[in-house]
Image (cartoon, rainbow over all chains, first blue to last red; front, side, top):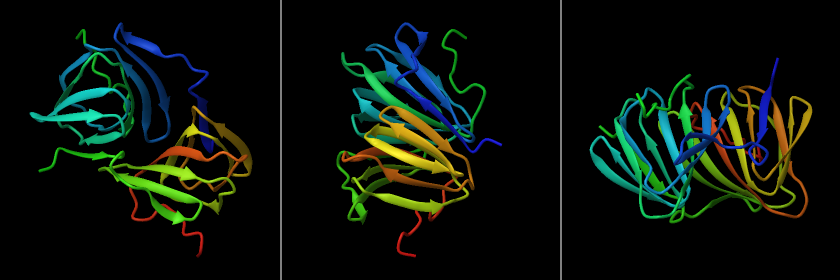
Length: 116
Length: 116
């Protein structure tokens, strides 16, 4: 029986979901953790999911709109969007955003396919 | 009804749990996220808890012992210790360790009081 999972993010390449969006995913037992890099101009359209989503901003600025309320995040900010709450986001300014996002519980699919 | 929680970690001071251990805690709905700084020499004795614990090392080196197996973590490493699995840890070398730990589900008390 496994007792732990370990990964080196330094030795893992990002995968591109979109030319302006790349991610590294770590899937644990009850939580999924994603290291994201968003390029300037990236927008996520309004969506919701049953997972709670916690975003930790490591650098850059991101404007979230959570159930219609605008919430600006910058380096060092941490924000939980509660389960099933509608939200969208857009990068502010011309700096990339580096963020760690935590999703719980785990789902096969928390990322909304922007092309659908 | 609240839809989100936001905190600025830049504007929050660490609290000292021990002269060699300080933390900033963010409690979300289903997950607790802690920013830790461990000084050289810090040790956590063997303990376990019902929460899954995911550790992201931001800097420094930490030796975990998970169910008797030694697992060395360094900058960029991410490791999940599964629920109820016994683990201990010790800082390696003379550099501080900066880590983000994610505990899920939330508990009133996931930190083992070292004095008890």
